[in-house]
Length: 300
Image 1: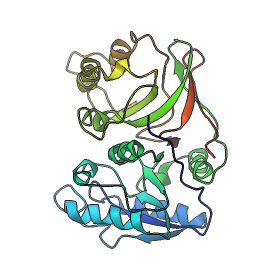
Image 2: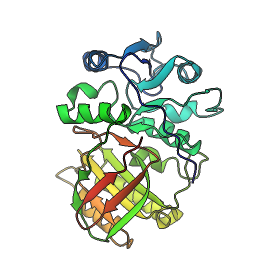
Image 3: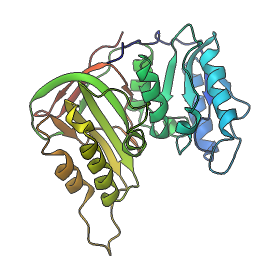
Image 4: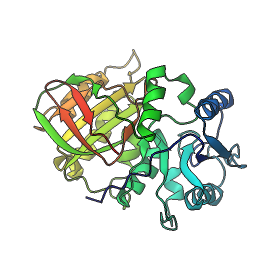
């Protein structure tokens, strides 16, 4: 298990850099609203001049997106990195990538495709934030927005409540991300060690058979045998077409995860479609499979 380094708490006036490491920016109005939220909290934002580049479905060619990340990570005045959106593409820039050359760890904030960056950074021992990107923050409820700022500014955050499947109480290191992205990290150097991990997963617009296929891969790979608990966020818009015989996504999750003999909590308020409660990658948490609670230790 890597050492856990938390970047210094943010404070109003700090400089944050805005990058597009994954899919091409399309939701410009939502982007501007989210930028406004960060600025209204007193932060200076430096937006990459390539923020609206396009190369197919990507936000510019790999080297350009890699340069955006490097410039932000290596900037000594920058205290945090805000990702524009998910989509696909962050794994491509992790080829030939190193997190070195930054004297001061800084916050990396995003979810969905940003899972790959968060997990890669975690393998270097640095915690990041699984939370709203700059095309979704403006759609979050007030409590979720305030939770994000509480987290990065060093204030305590409240436990999340979901549906407990039983299994008792366990403590471990939280590793949170998107199921599809995480599944495609299996067998790569980006996948962190999973011993003692509480694995938190969410997804969107994946048919139940695809969720089944991914979780079966996790089972067959042996990866799930190492984790000590599972926390499930939203699995939204994951219905099968009404004309096709199918399990529900809830039935698939129960079938593939309910026999592992570890605490499981589902229906936690994080993931695609709001609310997307911010969580820290790589901090100690407690998962209560009976009460259905995920509690994060005060990080600072």
